[in-house]
Image (tube, rainbow, N blue to C red; front, side):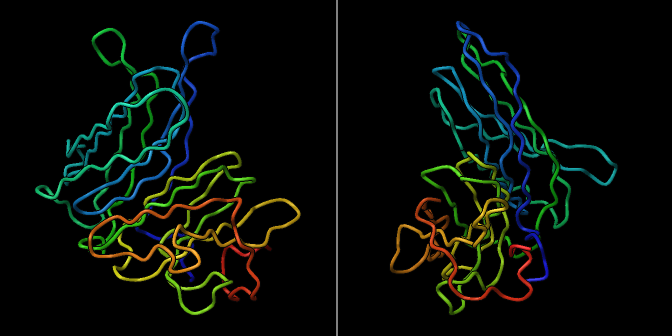
Length: 257
C-alpha cells in the first residue's frame, strides 16, 4: 500500500480545445485519458467530444532506442463513431516486436473527422510512458466504465479483495484521477487472473469525503472477477456508490486527510 500509483498504469488527463465554438461549424475537443503500457501491448483510452458525424482516433506508438532516436513501433485506428461525447480505448498489439521492460514509449493521438473523402485532424495529444515489468505478460485486464459522471474530483482505485466488504483493502493495481463531470473509462492491465477486484471512489472535496465502493454488474455477488480469457468489463455508477462503513487501513494514501 506504500506505492501511490501502480507502475502498470500511467494516467494522463488532457482535454485540448482546438476549434472555437460556432453556430454553423462543428466543433471538437479531445485528449489522452489513460495509458496502460506493457511489453507487447498498449491500451490508450481517449476522451472528448465531436460535432462530426464520422470521427475516428489514430494512435501511433514510438519507442526510444539506445541511440536516443524515436523509432516507429505500431499504429492502431479505432472504428468510426458519430458525434457527441466519447471515451474510447484503442489497443495496439505489437507482440511480434515486443520491447524490453522500462522502455520509454511516446504515444501520439490524432482525433480525426471525415471531410470529403479524407480524414483531417481536429485535435492531437501526446505523452510518454515507461513500459511496465514482466508481470504485464499473460495477465488479465479489467476495463471499468461508469454510466454517469463523477460528482466531484477524486481518485478511483482498483484493488484485489481481501476480506472486508465495506472498506478498501487488498493489492492496489491502479489509481486513476477523475474530474468532476467526467465519466470513467479505465483499462487496467496486468491484474492477476482469477481474483476478485473492487473499485473505490475517493471524493477529493465536498462535505462527505467517505470513500464509495463502486459495485460492479455482478453485485451483490462477485465483483468483476477476472478470468484467463482476457479483458473483463466492470460496469458501474457513481450514483450507486456504497460508503465505507469500516475503518480504513492506517496507511491508505487516498483516505481523507
